[in-house]
Image (tube, rainbow, N blue to C red):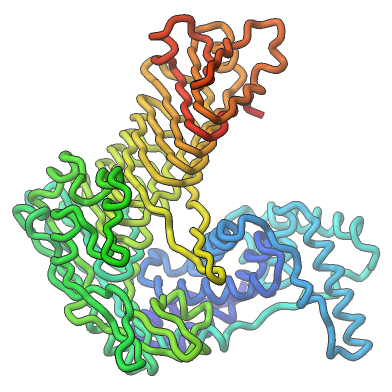
Length: 619
């Protein structure tokens, strides 16, 4: 192993030297490329993801706790970016045919490139753990020991995977000299540096005394990526990076200095709201030029959270609740009383700008990398326009303190011993939480190992895309729930839910999305109810639990008005008594309970007005 020390370059970047990021890019770009190719088979897409990941890493350098492990940290960012890419497309794409075209190659070069392509295709057929090791070895130029560190596996494992990978390559590919043909590496150094040199960053390291307040309320008045973790001591610690982009390095530096972090204690946050700043609200055309519309952060708070009407929840003068009165139950004014009470005496932290800043760029400047730092609100053939400024922060919370996050764009929380709440936020992951997890008007991607109760109200349908004169909604969001022990209470519009091992009193009302639940066992105090209007419901039962249903130890009931019920779980149980199926012109019922009260109060109750219900044996 050579004497490359990534921590030295990280420190120089954090001190404001953007050029110090270039050696890190050169060092790790092909290891990152190999990681991306584990998930994304298209070299073009993998290279785009790597560029994006480096820019994201640059903007988040303040979050890196152990700067010696920059490479390992970067690989996690790349993997997460790949998962986002796959989630957006919902499939792994093959090699782009345009990549395979060798239009301008000379005959000899064409033959060599074709051999490279054949090798890449052979590598694609390897099992993932072998493919990952082979790609990283051939592309990165790193030692076995460095690869082991990046992959977070023992050195012996890397050696074994490479050996097995080579054996399988010989079986898949006829060329005997495959080890001498290096799969073509990439070089994204120039592209990454071109972006990061237009980005200014400012590091945050603040200790925030909490006094006798038991709750922290974190309000995000500009794009904020927030991670929350448990910490020792009596004070909260906030650290990370503020970022801004500009037409020049100097303009970007001026812009990032305008981002504020306010922290103080208030007697009643629900009444006081956040620190006062100016929040971007959209783009309007003024004399042929795009111009920002803005509103005060306090005004937003009062309008939505006190008045119950979202200031931008209006279309052509018509409120959503005017057309759909049932939506009144999902506005800020209908926030549950316990969540309101939690917004009393608190330490408030606000990320904001006193004065809004925006920028106009040519469309050619809107590369995939730039969009991760600058998200335009208005795009045309001539120009793009949007607000400037973002934050990537870590909040360390002492024991005995609860947290509420408001308007967070990307939030993660891990290892908390108390409860956490989200209001009008996007929660990427909550894991290992001792207390309750509450989400109001907030999206949730993953929740696992929650010992308290999970509560969520979310009734949004994402954005709209135009196809000619036809307006279409984007695909429903994904949500994964695992090992929730204290109960679940969810009411939402349309989300694709995959859940497993839920305990306590469970009610999931997913009106138009698909709900899938895998259940291994059912505790004595548990009751599970899954309901939808038009979404499908899939219940997968472990064999032991299915046997309890057949023995009438666990009662299961499924209702539908005009959908269908499939009970394949009982197909190979002909010798046993299957659940009773009954129907009339109004409702179809499947149940193993015998009285009306037992049917309605079964351990599992599945209800769908128009969607399909499937009950399956777990594989």
